[in-house]
Amino acid sequence: MFNKFDVLETIDMVEKEHLDIRTITMGISLLPCIGGTAEKTAQNVYDTVCTKAKDIVKVAEQLSGEYGIPIVNKRVSVTPVSLISAPFPGKAGLVGKALDRAAKELGIDFLGGYSALVHKGMAEYEQIFIEGIPAVLAETERLCSSVNIGSSKSGINMDAVKLMGEVVKETARLTAARDGLGCAKLVVFANAVEDNPFMAGAFHGVGESGTVINVGVSGPGVVKHALEGIPGANLNDAAETIKRTAFKITRAGQLIAKEAAKRLHAEFGIVDLSLAPTPVMGDSVAHILEELGVETVGGHGTTAALAMLNDAVKKGGVMASSHVGGLSGAFIPVSEDIGMIEAAQKGKLSIDKLEAMTAVCSVGLDMIAIPGDTPATTISAIIADEAAIGMINNKTTAVRVIPVPGKGVGDSVEFGGLLGRAPVMPVNTADSSRFVLRGGRIPAPIHSNKN
Image (cartoon, rainbow, N blue to C red):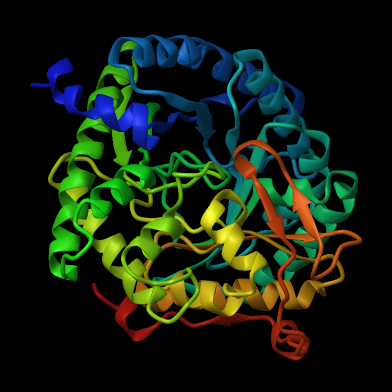
């Protein structure tokens, strides 16, 4: 039985250590919205989202006031739009724009689900949909897009990987006036999950029920503060401290999630207990790793420290909620973490080291600014490498890179808000085009054959 006493001890965390509920995300099925025409479908989508999520901002503000825990983002995720628009190839943009209008009408921060799942193959309507992503992201403000190009069960669709390198480049070109900001709303996944509350990769899976509330909690500052209290402890004791802290954070998220679901007449889905940083000082995953003893994130020992952190967060979280899902672990988005930004500016953190870190953390190469003249095939190769880590390790990995038009290594870019700022980081300039242009599908690993 949950009540307000479950979160009394979190008050100090909120006031001094940046504890917050990072997002309340309502997942909405759009399958009943498919109509006889693209225009009718788009109108149905707009009406459904506006009806189902009409109170999400109000309820979030009520809960924040009642429990004293900031709720930073109010979001919506929907059924992958490539499925909703399948009968109308080339007209998916009408649905995307309808969703963006709904997001503005509701006052929510972002809406995810302008997505396609092509990990095993890409139908003609899906290819048309993906090719249209850059224009839709350039013409909308709050709409987010994702494409799943691989999985541990199916392998990696290299034809889709090649296409996504081109899509990222085109998205950057069409949003060049905003330093390629459209790419910050575009994620390429392997092993994408259906209940992720975080943007830009959230979508409402077809295995989910009609309307679901998923909550993402955070608290890097809380974890760092707890570790500061045991400066001489060994790593086993540090892991135990992180577990206990993650338990407390997740209990707060569970309480908010269940109450939000009740008030919004939706099912309670999951609590995602990821440590999601912000550019604010005191809210950094990188600083946790440094508190564990690595001088600067990116130095030797960083991957081991991150592995321990990620595992301890999961162990503590699963004891606090019977429905832990989403991604759940530690995020390492460069532009959104003040410690990552500083390390990258010093040259201590490279893309190669970030790739190694993604083998043990929640997601992947995230919010990384790269030179605007990076070839599309190089971006595709980066996506392929990251997807391989996810496929072999049976975990979610993703790529969200921004090739900043007109900028190169040594420059920096300012995205603002939670998206933060980032130095433009160098990429390996070796030509990967012959590999990418082979196309086809990288077969699934042997351990995928479990049935």
